[in-house]
Amino acid sequence: MLTTTLGRLTLKNPIMVASGTFGYAREMQEVVEVPRLGAVLPKTITAEPRIGNAPWRTVETSAGLLNAIGLDNDGVDAFLEHHLPYLRELGTSVIVSVAGRTCEEFTTLAARVGSEAGVSAIELNLSCPNVSGGVDFGTNATSCREVVSSVRDACKVPILAKLTPNVTRIAEIAQGAADGGADAVCLINTVLGMAIDWRRRKPMLGNGMGGLSGPAIKPIALRCVHQVASAVDIHIVGIGGIATIDDVMEFLVAGASAVQIGTANYYDPTVSTRLIDELPTALKEAGAESVKEMVGTLG
Image (cartoon, rainbow, N blue to C red; front, side, top):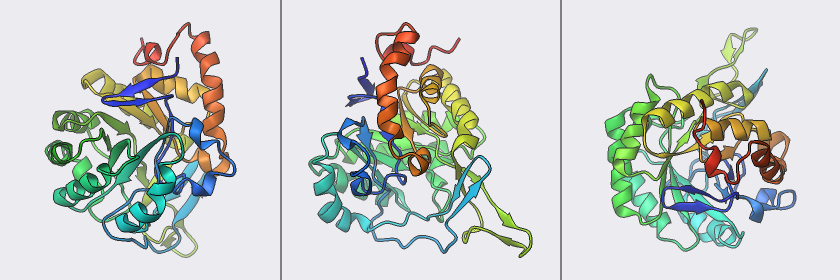
């Protein structure tokens, strides 16, 4: 009933945790039944370690969270040596998020990680607004297609492309990812925003601007999922403000075959497993016998 597919990738259920909100999963093992998740996405990794941006890195808003972490991570060598051995023993799918500065760096990194045992898929972070050049590949359909195609040729595992909403026509970028051979697109990454301390006349984030996540962006994410589902033949992962079973069902109806839980993990770490528990009842209420029956049924 709960099984879902994203191109070549099959998940036992559609509930995943978003990269950057779940650490390397070790941090959550005492409070979350991790093996029950459809998939785990550890924080994005890069070729070299990154210390990230200067503080402040996060600012709460009235309906969400602004962050400018800057892809702080241990680098691929440390990930493969220290984190992946733990992740591959979790009993669920592991989707590794990677980011690069060039097409060649994306390709080399994805090929290296994708060849490791225990890696179910690669998510290409083409849309981080908090690093220099972080959204370049996600704002141009041709560039998006080129990097996805290059990774697809070099990597045997399924490829997911995470896209930014900070564009005029997101369906065109998603079409580029589809043309490049992506198994699915992940919609959406954070929305560019900022917070200001008017007394100091200064931005509150050390980076000036950052990515807005949480309930505030859910309507934007739903719109993006619906637009892409209506125009592009590709599986979709919905992301943005998901915290309740109603949120999950709305994204499925809009056209997503799976979802990722992000900001909600910070204030309710057990939200993902609770949603898994509630999903069968919601499907029954909708008269559906499977997740697939709900996907893209918006009238």
